Image 1: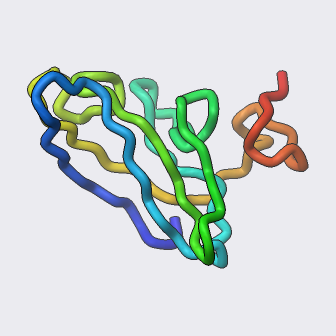
Image 2: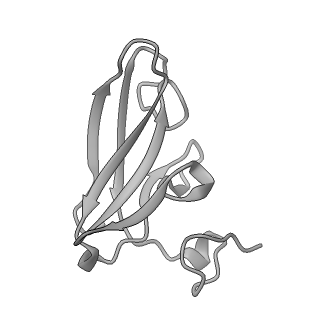
Image 3: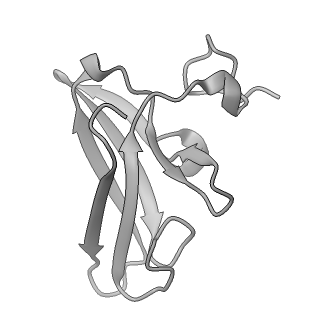
Length: 111
């Protein structure tokens, strides 16, 4: 976690239940996702296709896109109240420990 844990709160527009967030980081930080712990305490990459996110090189920055649902499993507020509170990290996690082959990048899942 080269820039540490990031905590934030976002107020949603009326009628909006899911919000997409983007975090820009320096590619030299060598991160492979935006990671948050799930209910079991396992860190998951929200900036992956599996969770509706993506990683995009935009100019000289790496953009980590991820989605969080109000009251959903990654909203620390745990209730649909028009506000999302979350804490996660731009980090490099060893994908082989999470079910990915080490040379596959972050796009494919390996069983």
